[in-house]
Length: 133
Image (cartoon, rainbow, N blue to C red; front, side, top):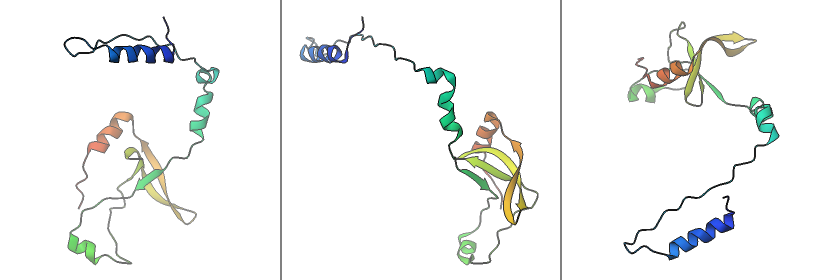
């Protein structure tokens, strides 16, 4: 039996007003109508909106630890070194999904993707703590 929202509300109100002698309320099962499936849901049309969305990708060139003294000494022209052969990490939000090499293309920095990480590798990379100095 499928109940309307009004009938469900009436049943709930009746249950709230009728208390058991031991101050416990009795639970009652409720049947809900199945949600109607739209034609677009099965056709793949719902993915079109996702395929055209812009998502931010972050390229992390490196990470290092420095002392507070060194941090306070940084200024315009300061350089934090990173070995040239170490790959840059690419992130979608906080999840690492690829690695690549920093290159220059038409006078701009870019990242040439070298490896796309699988779901398991991305989770493992996220859990790893860098220890570069």
